[in-house]
Length: 279
View (cartoon, helix red, strand yellow):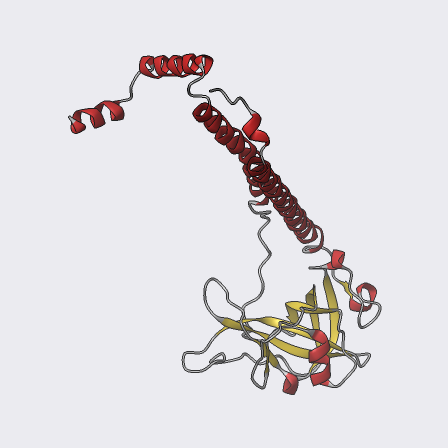
């Protein structure tokens, strides 16, 4: 006996519909999240393109207070004049480069006005026999003029620690406590140049590659997944309708027509080969 489509309004199928709607909402949220990630990547590219090769400015012009930093000034080159505090050098651990474990060398730099700015002099590989670089090139002594590119202070990471002389993250407020002097805590600097320049220095940071990543394609994929869920639900309802109404003359005629179309459809070489192997 024909039951029509009444079953589709049962509690079971309404529950399935609710699950599909929830899944589609989750896919939409993930799509929007990917678009937000793309916007962040594009903003980072813009910062690099605008700031990387700009004319260096005095640090006080860009950072008017010790704790100030505007994200639009990331990668902005600034000039510093003063002396390295060589005895206060630190190593930031957990800094891989090209698949190799390593460290970044942080040296506090006392400016001519008495404030301290944290300078990241570059990257060094981990040692062969110890959890530290084999050799750390010494920063130049005496009066030095630097050009550095600004980066924001890093957050702390719960549960991550470091041995003496090292830090787990470049969290400037914590480093300022170690230095014990008035220190910039909003931003630190990636070393671009030193004058006078030493004979050797850690590996310098290179200009980031302008790549926004696959976020746009991922956003479209999540939307497609959400839409496909509704098609899948419709297909499942259709299959149950056919099963429940198999004895209905109209449905039997439609089933026969589907069979005729399937029989008339040209078979692929793979299907013919499977049939011969089965025989």
